[in-house]
Image (tube, rainbow, N blue to C red; front, side, top):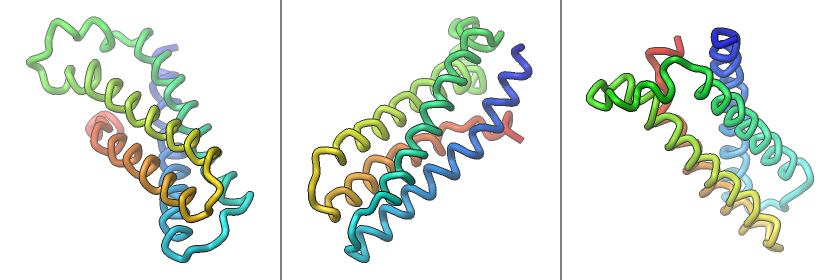
Length: 140
């Protein structure tokens, strides 16, 4: 089960990152062009939200069934173990919290420009945090 979850988590990450990247680019383009926020823009952001939350759930399950999860806390001097057991989960949880805040804040806004700006900032920060803590050596 561990190996299946690990491969699924790695594979789903491509989809989640693609959706998040598209949402950030869409928000930047919408903000800069001052276009009207439409249902299509909302769906793009929603799919990115769903994709990242699904990735989080898969990651949390993987964390608790992984031999590298909690057992590695005693070896924080090892950079690779620290990345997989502490930095990757913690930073990505923070990133997904930021993405969720961005989604929640946009619902209270009326102005299209403010909605695009909110998505660009919160989803963009989430994307940067996620990219900063991907264990690249384990991914490929």
